[in-house]
Every structure is written in C-alpha cells, then in structure tokens.
Length: 619
Image (cartoon, rainbow, N blue to C red; front, side):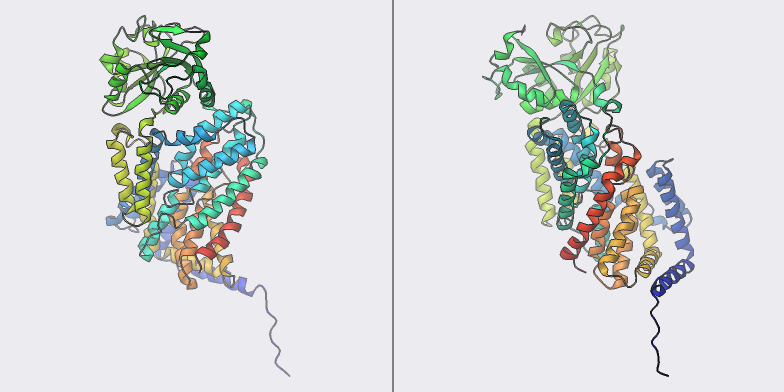
C-alpha cells in the first residue's frame, strides 16, 4: 500500500508552543524564581495602588539585595544611571522654559476661545505634541492645562471635552525624541549597554513622528467625539476657586506700549482673562474715559485677575510689577522671586496701615502685587491703600525670604498654588541655551546628560531657575522608581530571566510572520503600560525585546522601537500615565471614560507603527 502523508494537525504547533512554555517554567533557576516573584509582587502592588510606586520599587530592590539576587555593589547603580540623570535634568530644564515665558510666547499667540472645538483641539494638540517632544510630557500638559481650562470657560463648554485630547496629544508627542518621555531615555540606555551605542536624539522621530501625527489627526477629527459629554457643573476645576485680585502693573520707561491707547490693550487682556479697570498717573486714578488715554512711561494699569492670568498678561506686554524704584529693589533679589498669598488678621503688622507706611518694599524687598477685598472697592493706589482684617494680599517677594516676610507681617499664609513668576526678559536666552544643547547632542558633539547639565547650570546662573527651587522641580518619586527598578531589571537579565520570557514568547509565536511577532510584543507591552508605570514596563520589556530578536536572529532595533512606542501608549485608563491622572478631576472623568477614545487610538498606534518600524528599522 502506498504511503499516505499524515493529515496536518492545525493545533499541533499550538500544542508544541504550550509544552515549550511549560518546559521554560520548569527549568527556572532559584534566582529567576525569586526575581519573577519580586516583579510579580511589584506589579501587583502597583495595580493595587495602596502604596506609592517609589516605596514599592525601593522595597523590592532592598529585598533583592538581601536575598542575593542583586549584587550589593550594584544596589544603587540605578541612581547614577544615565537614564535617571536625564529624567531629572529634563524636569529642571522644563521648569526653566516655563519660568522664562517660552510656553506663554507660543500659547498666547495661537490660542483663541472663539474657535470651534475641533479646531481648538487640533491647535492645542499640535502645541502640546511639539512641546512634549522637547520637554517632559507631564510638564507640557501641566503648562497647557490651565490655558485649555480658561479657553473652555470663555467658550462656555465643559473642560472635559478638550482635556483628554490634550493629554493624549502630549503623550503622543513624547514619542518623537529621545528626551520626550522616560521610556525612550531608558531604551536608549539599554541599547547602549547591550549593543554598544545608544539611540540618538531624533532616531525615534521617523516612527514616533508618523505615529504621533496619525494619532493627533484621529484625536482632532474623531477621538474627541467619542468622549461622553462631561457635566460642567460637576467639574472640579480648581481655577473656579481662584481668588481674583485687584492689581497694578507699571508701563516701563522704554515700553512699546507708550503712545498707545489703553483700549488697545483690551484684546490682550481678554485673551489672558484679565479685566482692565483704569490707570493711575501722577498718583491720581483715572476713570470714565480712561480707555482713550494715551499711555505714558510709569503709568500704572489697574487690573483684576487671578494670579496666573495676571503674570501671563504682564509677561505678554512686558509690564513691570511696580515703579522703577521698587522694580530695582526686586531685580536685586539674589535668588529669584516668588508669589505668596497671605490673609490679614487683627494682629497683623500691616492691619490698619498701608504697604508704604510699614516700608514693605525697602524693609523686606517685597511688593504688594494684588489685593482681594470681596464686596468692597479699593479707590486709592495699592501701596497707599489701608489694609483691613480679612484682606487677601498677593505679594511678590525674594525666594529666600518669602517665609520671613509672612512671619514679619504676622499674616496667615494660604496654600501654595505653585504660581511662578515669569522671567520674560530671558525667554530667548532660555530657548537659545536649550536649542544649542539639543543641537550639540543631536550631532554627537556632546553627551546628552552633559549637555542638559550645562543648560541647568546656565539657567541657575542666569536666574531663570532660582537656586532655591532647583531640586523642587525634580520629581523624586520617579527618580527613586528608576533608580530601584534598573538594578532589578539588570539582575533579571543577568540571571537569564529576560531570555526565558523572550524564549516563551518566541515559542508561543512560533511560525508567525515577523510583523505578527512585533505586534504581539507591542500588545503585551501596551497592556502592561495601561495598568502599570510606563517606566517599570519599559525596564522589563526592552530586554525581552532584545532577547526575542536574538532568538530569531534579527536586528534588535525594531523590537526596541516597538517597546518604545507601546510603553508610551497608555490610553485606556487614568492610571496608565500621569497625564491621564492629571486630567481626571478637572475633566470630571470616570475610570471608564478613557477607553472610549483610548482603545481605537491604541489600535491605530499599532496599525501605523508596525509598518513604520519595518520600513525605517528593517529586521
């Protein structure tokens, strides 16, 4: 009888894959079992959310060292790792760009409340995407979120209709450059350690740029329509609770506003949510026809605004906080300026007196920037107004003596709202220093951490970032998370754990086309990133991608790019990315609102990035 070929069993490969996976499990060493248990515990605790992620990661590191799976000499190596240093420096540089007014320079010329919602989302998304490519994407959202909320208030719509698109846009923009998001920084460092050279500044741009553009188009045209209409009445927008202050700003001697009518400032005032009430000239307040008054040097413009709006309006028109004499006192401050808010009590030094009478400017180098007295009018100049019990004062003081000023006045401080004073005269210096560092690093002329470190030093010396605030801008929990997870990730790789995971994934995807294997890696990484910190996800997934590439005998770069994009694509939940968490309250979102726009966006990211990876980073 002729030999009959066996009928192919379509389930045979699947059975072999499962048996191979079981074999990998049974062959684990003791160190691998301990490390997998540690990572499993870390991920479980991060999902639970009962303890903060930095405490969880650091505890896991200490346990790993104690059990001998992490060498004692490598226990704190992660804190000096280039990825950790870059993340910390990027946060300081981001703060410098904010303090210099670089962001206001962009937003105040491009944002208009009269635009249709779709157009507004497209423009804000584009601004957010570009900013987050060159600064930390959490910082980019923190800068633009108040602008977006103000625009929504002026347009009479719920902030939730535009905040989620803005958050997603800033996440997408971070994919484009090395410094845009921590996953890219970590992957570049891992590539340097394993393959001998890191990814450069714009190596992520072809894939990340195409993916970001596709995502932004989706968000602007379709995505925002999928968001459930938020109830504006339930919004926890903190800006609604902001105190509006009566304030005074002075026209500098060489101002471009000299010769213009006061009414010509109304458009800028409206854009910045500021009300112009009149002017003071030669110590006399003008009302009525003041809008037709031609501005002169040292005129004082009287406005009503919230602290952020006040500073943005001042920066936009290059106005001074006070007259020339007091401005000189302020500029002599050695460590920058800060805004503080205090409540006057019956026993306060200033109660029943004026700021001028107690010598606030010359004794404490402090200027009364604004005054809030609900239900009562203030008819005299700010510094000549008699202060009353219950008044809220907005004070501009040197950073190093702000607490002393509050104590000297005997007033009660209000909670710090993080209001920064924009050093608008240094905007181009800040931009130039940062652009120069990026250019030098991009051409390989200087190591990126060194370039960013030099920018930080220059920002401090130029007083763009006050020395006293230098370390407050660094998000220390993230630094601790990175510093703790990097040695654990290295231990997992040294023990053969990542090779084990990679082998299991290769076994499960055996017989599939390379693009399908990349897709599986992306989906697994993306799923982890939706529920875990993207930094922790990257530290585990990047070495697995390299091992998968080695097992298949192909280039590791496509797998690293897949992990980079996937780790940054956390769009399904408010806990997957800090940007999503930031908008949860102000947008009045619920946990289940994110997936409506996030799920199709994640599918689009996979569909666009896989072909892009195969074109620009071939196997």
